Length: 161
Image 1 (cartoon, rainbow, N blue to C red):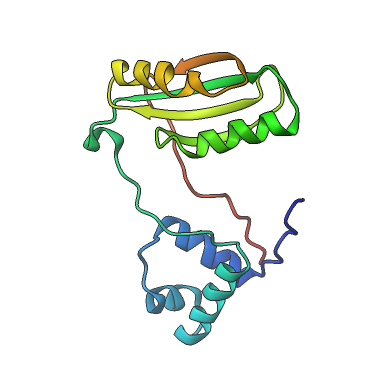
Image 2 (cartoon, rainbow, N blue to C red):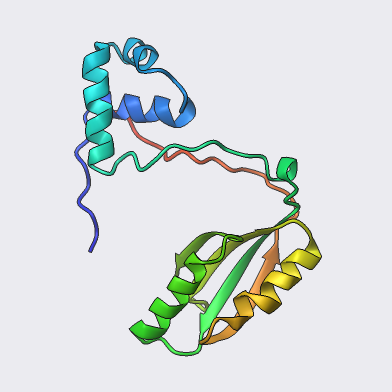
């Protein structure tokens, strides 16, 4: 069931735009930029967190700086499409740290995975000894990333004036 859309006012929209670009901004700095008091800002941010609009905070890490040279997108097709098979696959994917993202999709494949590895041999090891061992898969197709052209983690938020 889809979560209802949270009703964002212009101040909430500004808060989200700024926080997505400057996640380490202090409450006082954010309040000043938006034009409200720090206590009111803290209350708004907490309300956005509680409502699930803000889902977490994290640092962006350069994969190459930590030895990750391979990024791949893998299309996975399941042999059976019963709920039990889908649940089994999804639960298994949650246990694989190499899988950064997993989407249940429409089209020729059933799932799309974003996977990282240190090297092509590590990637091969992941495919052969982890991913291929998940029951119920009938097909995998890999697309290797040559270079990253655009990676914007923020959601575009239209502001109402």
